[in-house]
Length: 265
Image (cartoon, rainbow, N blue to C red; front, top):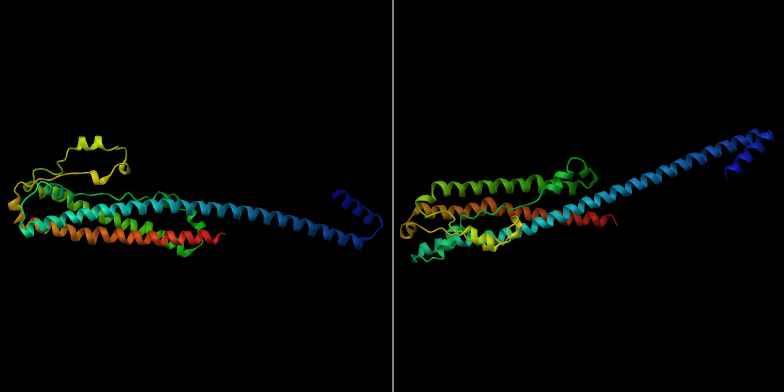
C-alpha cells in the first residue's frame, strides 16, 4: 500500500501535475488524521471498557459486603428479640408475684447481653477516596454515602451508648443485687464451641446466668424494675430503630446497585 502511494506521488511530480499532487497530499494527510482518530477512538473505547469492568467489580464487592451485613443484622435482631423477651418475662414474673425458678437466672443474665453487630465498612473505605467517581449515578452515590456515613455511624454510636449503660450497671448496680455478673462456666462453653472468631459460634448457646442475692427483695425493688423497663425502652429507641433503619437503607442500596448493573447490558 505504501509503495503504491509513493509511486503515485512520484508520477504526479514527474508529470508536473501540481494541482493533482496537492489534492493527493491533502488526501494523504486526511487519511493519516483519520487513522490517528480511529486509533484514539479504539484506545478510548478500550479504556472506557476497562473502567466499566472495574466499576462492575466495585459494585459486586459492595453487593457481597452488604449481603453479608444483612445476614448479621437479621441474626442480631433474633438474638436481641430474645433479650427483650427475657426482660419482659422477668417483669411479668415480678408483677404476678411468681416464685423464683432456677431458669430465671439465665433470663437475668440474658438481659445484660451485648452482641456487637460486625458490619463491614472496608469496601467503602477502600474506594471512597477516588474510585467512587466511577459511579456516575448521583442517586447511587448518595445511597452509598447514606449507608456508610450515616446509618453505620448512627448504629455504632447508639450501640456504644447501650453498652455503656450495661457496663455502668454491672459496676454500680448489680453488685448489691446479684451473686456475680455472668457466672456461667466459660471454659465448658468454650470447649463446646469451635471458637476461632466472632462468627464461628452460636450465640444462642451462650449462657451467662445471674443469680439474685434475694429474689423476694428484688421483686419489690422499684429501682430494678425501672432498670429493666428502661433497658427495653432504650434498646427499642437506641438500638433496634437504628438496626431497622440500616437494614432498610441496605435493602434500598442493594436494589439500586442491581439496577445500575443491569444498565450496563
